[in-house]
Length: 637
Ligand SMILES: Cc1ncc(C[n+]2csc(CCOP(=O)(O)OP(=O)(O)O)c2C)c(N)n1
Ligand SMILES: CC(=O)[C@@H](O)[C@H](O)COP(=O)(O)O
Ligand SMILES: [Mg+2]
Image 1 (cartoon, rainbow, N blue to C red):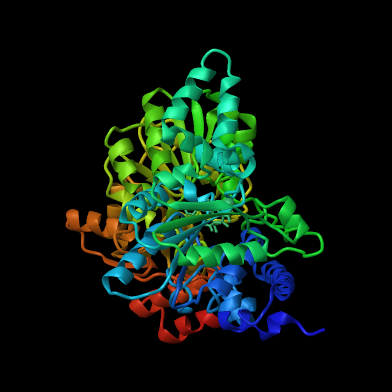
Image 2 (cartoon, rainbow, N blue to C red; image 1 turned 45 degrees about the horizontal axis):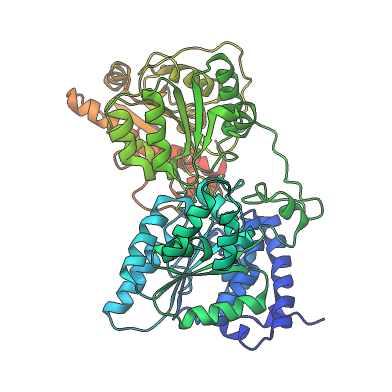
């Protein structure tokens, strides 16, 4: 049977279809989504939920002349399929292939790059204001989820857009889910909009209801009758958005193509800011995702028939943190845990189950999460804020102004530090070393393996000051976990071996690379002095100086950006102490690193063990002769 999807190569092809044909196309798109994500991994549930919404948007609007901006952008696969990238779907999230997020460099239909939440309305308003100033004519649409709407930036933008009054359409895609169940008062408000028919009652009906309230009811009813606006508050759905200057339309069935296309076509003609509240179901059309939208929010490759993910054997750093923090909280009642809508991703779900009163999911509000922690610490609690490195960027001022400046004992569990792989440049956690190490009053650690990680977490709670522990995405080194924990003295590195030819100082997952480099070099007779820095701040100055004096040649290895990074801090120590040494820094160069498997990315930036060994051999040819180092890559001696 011919498939409609085969004839869809641009949004223009959609406009030839009628509603039944588009419904059929929706089914075919869902099949493609499930197949693709089962192979490549990715954000399945959100995409399954926006199939009809995306079809309707491309049916009514004329992309790329009209601009559609996808908030977070994890739900943009359907948009990619409809805008000429259907055949490239098998390359999704792989190195050199399609990005999992909108990317202007990939297509003119991806008007604005996203990945972090709650930026779409600001960007859309910027485009709309640019359009107005340049006297151009096109529509601008921001598609934002109910989770992303919890982010402060979205409100800053609504506030400005309502005031600016220009033509802009916000489509609120409300599926009641962030990654987990959406939280907060706003979420409850959206829920009331969805479910309470009282919003549609007439003035007379409202007065009747009010009269039934004993004591005060009749008075309120009389007052409401006099004050027009008060009645409006009760009668008009979406009054919150209306009061901000938006025309609210909704709720609309986000899976009914007939209703969606009509409403969008009307909204397109309206003047000023308009908000359409569309109700969708996350995971729609694939039962495992519909039943577990949180698991299928972002998932690795899985079996389509069962929905089961491909199993891993070694524990992830996140799992280790998860177990640690539950045990620690059993011992210390003052420990509270905060997440910004990432309970699953940061491993706080078990904590939430065990200590519901001590767990706080604040929504996608990293800034608030950090200052909330500061307030709690001032109030005598022991807060741990678990946030991905890339999202902590949002809370920079709060770390400085609210936590560090007041030297408050907040523990930052910084997950996804380093390259994260398939999510790519919006999500790589490569900046935290640089942006944190300049902050006074902050201790920063990075573990080389699981035992060190647990020791660091334990140490963090012994220090009466702000402490950050950064650790990577995914599995650890697979070492056996020892029972006894060691408290590490701040700034104390770990000497692994002494050697006379070359010194390597590595930190965090850089140590795993360093170990392999040492093996390669030792096989060629090079004697390496190897130190696991453990601390990014404070640094083990004494050890580093001793080492530099002895070997004169140092290599630093970190999984973070080189600019202002850990290697730079080693150079600062040497310079400040007048030590002359030849230093090679290995880390992330001054460019945004694409998406792909971490090992592939390491190779690209010259950070995998073989590349590092080759760089060492080429920089110091007297250590190894050319012929020998050339053979590293082929594993020959
Ligand atoms: C600043 C920031 N914090 C956290 C995230 C992680 N994150 C990605 S999607 C998402 C939930 C978004 O929910 P919603 O906007 O409702 O989209 P849905 O997946 O439900 O369609 C979160 C928390 C992010 N991308 N950016
Ligand atoms: C879109 C987004 O920001 C998150 O869903 C992110 O992709 C999760 O990453 P992890 O898979 O590392 O939890
Ligand atoms: Mg949602």
